[in-house]
Image (tube, rainbow, N blue to C red; front, side, top):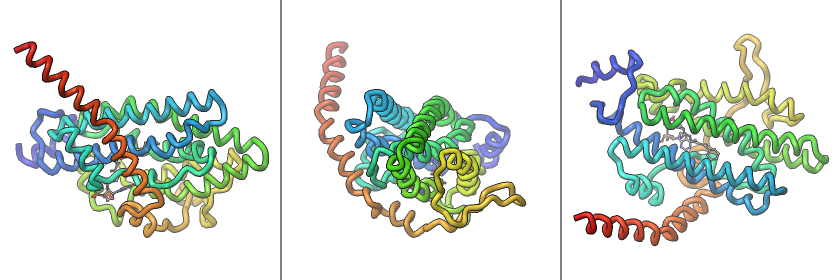
Length: 307
Ligand code: FAQ
């Protein structure tokens, strides 16, 4: 199939399935994005996992435990979707553990107080869902289908985060100050999560042509800002941006400049928690070696029996 024929299929809205012919760079772009997405879900368990033992009530603990388990599930669906493109799970995971593959910048920030768990649900899952709902309509079938369930769960995650923030914002002055402090620390990293500005984004144009991405990074960032500012107002919290203002002409909020140096520093491996996060995954992988060995031995035994 020529590139033109492939593009025609994409333009007419046909979903591409694993056994279909596809240009090699389409396949590679999907492997890159889906595996980075999977790694983000897996590493993304760590900042919140840090608070499971310290959640303030049994109910909050049960909810947080379920949320973190959901993130593990999302990682697994996405690793499976990546496998349909011809890369093995071992290779994908090796790329994460060796530091070759990226995962979302946002998970390299520390969770210092309980309010950070509220801020992650509200802002980080909020930003994730703005990005992920369009992915349910992306051109690659297995990725699009995995995203449907993921988005349903992320909606619950965002609501639980907002509920924590609401409880704190309506609590004692100390609790409200904790919520404000968490918003101050998570706001800008949540905006960076959407990726570099359109002018700097090297993959957007091609990924949009292939309908792997349906909106640009800046479009999704704007959507996130527009939906989140009124929520902050409802909470009675201040977004930490003196330049934030409604622009009636554009019908959107304007924001102040994003510190892209910080973003690039984090994705180069120098954020506050990059080393700690990778180390935690390496140790978990090493601790799980006996499970992989036992599963492989069992499979060999079954094969020998059947032969
Ligand atoms: N962090 O040309 P672009 C979640 C990299 S899931 C690190 O714009 P693209 C759920 C990018 O990979 C969060 N790296 O790239 C949850 C590329 O590097 P490369 C993850 C980033 O792919 C919640 C380079 O910069 N979501 O949070 C970031 O067209 C709570 C140039 O960038 C997804 O992965 C970043 N923030 O657009 C879990 C969604 N941004 O590969 C637990 C799917 C960019 O050339 C708790 N992914 N880079 O070396 C996407 O939609 C896209 O891949 C973007 C980036 C929008 C992230």
